[in-house]
Image (cartoon, rainbow, N blue to C red; front, side, top):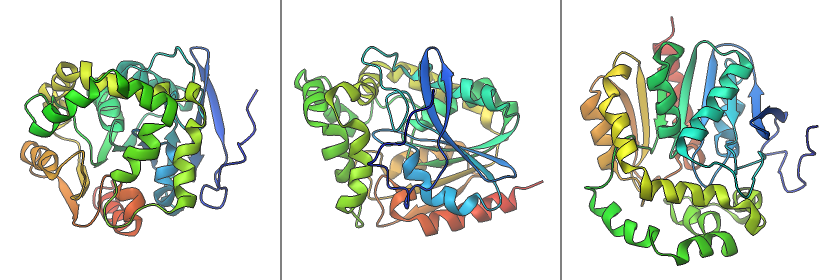
Amino acid sequence: MNRQTPQWVDILEYPFKNCYFNHNGHQFHYIDEGKGENLLFVHGTPSWSFDFRHLIKSLSNKYRCIAIDHLGFGLSDKPKNGNYSINEHTNNLKALIHHLQLSEFTLIVHDFGGPIAFNYALENPHHIKRLIAFNTWMWSAENDDNYKKMKRILKNPILPFLYRQFNFSASYLLPKSFGKKPLNKKLMNQYTSPFASKHEREGTIGFVQSLINDQDWFESLWQKRAILNAIPKLFIWGLKDNFISSAYLDKFIEAWPNSDSLKLETCGHFPQEEEPELSLYAIREFLESTSD
């Protein structure tokens, strides 16, 4: 039975019909708005489908816009002992694609949504019409100086305590990731409320563990990147990102020099939230220029 929409959800900001499907004993939330070509949005951490709302409100007048909430995020189930591995998130995404019988679509990804969706795309390139990526990656960061510094923090045993007890990821790290347009209190509430209790924060810890343990797996994605060579790509990048720098964009462009890109000078980690109009313009131009 589908759950009631929580009272904290701002239905003016997020005016979408809530859809659900069941997979592996868990209920997953997604939105499915508009008609036309399929656009599938895949979020990262510590966010949910809410951070794509501006894009979906606008693009759904011409396209079918679908956005999942990962297990442990948004309005999906948040089991204490859930499987929060990257491969399992990909399997959950695959289950949604099967549930909706999607045969061709454009992937629009951000942050951890990148490796989750790239993993699917590498296994199913025939389903992918285009790739649009905001501040993400698909390789090992072991040789990155910023990662080397961050890894010491990630491995600190106090970090899971901070995540569980103080909602550290959404309450502290998320606002630190923005550029010159910080979130106001009302919008921040939409990002912190999905993790209202310590029992609802295991999904965010799962991504921390992935950063520690999955670097070789990320690199394995990159070594297979040629599978995606023929797929048109657009990269939209906030250059003031404190976590995923412009060097990551440079690496993507070096690998796929025919890709389109938009660099946002004053924007941080969330271009779709910080600069939705500029992001939308670039996306519309890209979708139209690569249409059949």
